Length: 270
Image 1 (cartoon, rainbow, N blue to C red):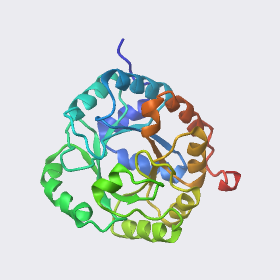
Image 2: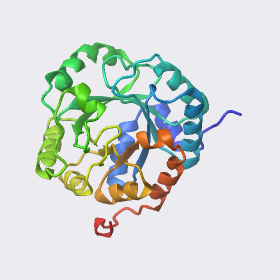
Image 3: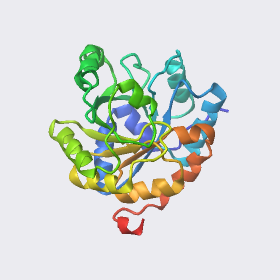
């Protein structure tokens, strides 16, 4: 039986290509977004089907598709499988310039502003710009900030950059502000896949209060309680990936934290 998403808003977003406008509006109203990150290297077809089904049940808002490597040819197949089963928008989260496909709805055009690797600040972008300019994808420029997650993650190793220390809120704040002033549309704070420690709530609160653009937070988020804490701290969009690869049922459990969140609720309650 083919599964269909019951989310009318997702259908509208997909057809009108205004994902970023939705994120902007959501930040203004305090409406939080739940994203499931799917790494084509890690999920088998049967596991993917379960993740899609649970995402529909849980009311997931978006899928991020990508990873630090993506060493197989499953990217297009994963995108095709998702589209056949639901209308949840799919956004490419590329780890390199090869992770591109017209089958997605949008792409995070990531600039690693926390590091000093010129290739990931602008170099790779120059190579992919002609392709993206002509593509039907909605391109969302994003300042990507790698935060120390207590272990050397794949993204840290592959990017050859030093993450921002988890206790250096001032560095994170200044980096995020610089990204916003450079015209980047989003800020993404990530502890990396498999992180031992997620981005601290205090850092999320500090960065969220210093910028006007939407704030994405991911990496090391393993429990509904941590989801709730991040929401109260000011994250606009929360991304969960590694945790649901071993226990997909977490999708439904974490979605409850989004339903229970009340905009304007003080982070003091955390």
